Image 1: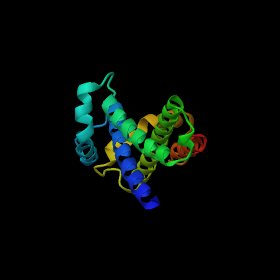
Image 2 (image 1 turned 120 degrees about the vertical axis):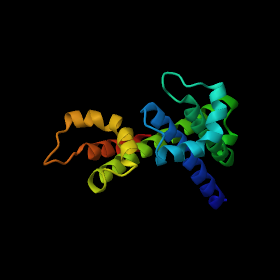
Image 3 (image 1 turned 60 degrees about the vertical axis):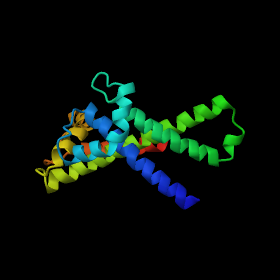
Image 4 (image 1 turned 180 degrees about the horizontal axis):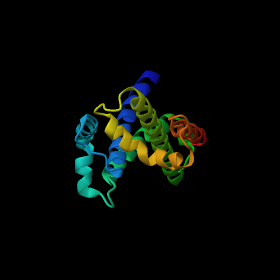
Length: 177
């Protein structure tokens, strides 16, 4: 049973990550024309296109992608709750709130992991290969998160320490979530 849950969790987390990445790319006005954008779009269109008929994008935000991620996370959380013994004693409203709380918590954790991964990838690419095809989108994704720290923390000998500070804060947030 643990192996089945592990595989299901891995698949759901992969697609939730892609949906959140699509949401973040649209929100950050990152071009979908490169390899990363094409990969994300091709693997998420199956859910996002039908949802866009029901939930249109408003204010430049791709609500359909976010809703797809939430729906998948709700399904996983529902399965987790149905297998736990605590779900037997909860009433309908309590169960619904617990399910929603678990799903939102899972999405927040994935969002923080994506931010950390993008920031680490951006920092490595800036040193190793700043002209690679993926460097542009990764830089655009990390810019909104790094910019506040870059305004406060000066570069020391040409080294930007803001990614390190952001990752430390993200790790602390993960402990609280």
